[in-house]
Image (cartoon, rainbow, N blue to C red; front, side, top):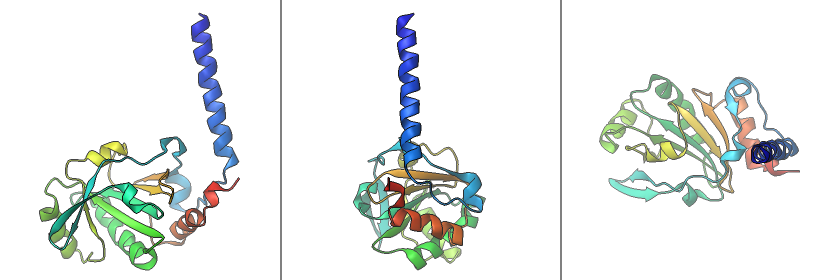
Amino acid sequence: MNKNLFRAGAVLASFLLAAGLAAAQPAPPREGVFADSYVEIIPFGETPETGFTLYEEGEEVERQIGDFEGQLLVVNFWATWCAPCIEELPDLEALQVERGGEDLQVLTVSNDRGGAGQVLPFLEQHGLGNLDVYLDPKGELAREFQVRGLPTTFIVDPQGQVVGRIEGIAPWNGLEAHALIDFYLEGRHREE
């Protein structure tokens, strides 16, 4: 009986501590679609170390999220057969073109089993030539990120912490998305 009481107390203390830590940090701006679908996942913590593939100039190069340390990442899981993903990709491409660089990278990670042979013609057919081709054909990285459906996008801060998740389509080239990105680029989520 005392063990169960102790466990319940420990769980409650952990919850209160987590709630206190989350409350101490400024909340990201939540406007438009981000007000309804944006979910902070502070407890997720470090990003998975599972590898994925970058297809570049006819070669496949193994990558990890940690390779992008120091950059804010918008990591989007998608597939060629996913209609909402197809709708969202042009906004992700526009975000990469407009804001991508030393501070920000958009990683659109395809979960298509056919790999580059399936993804490259699809991107060409849809005029999406400004996105790097990242592949996760076995869904290993998606499983590590606990993706429940496509599209799902994670925001990873420059310190390698997963700080947010959006399930479903989001207007990544809209003012709301830019405000959210600026919040993390400026490190306001780490202010106390």
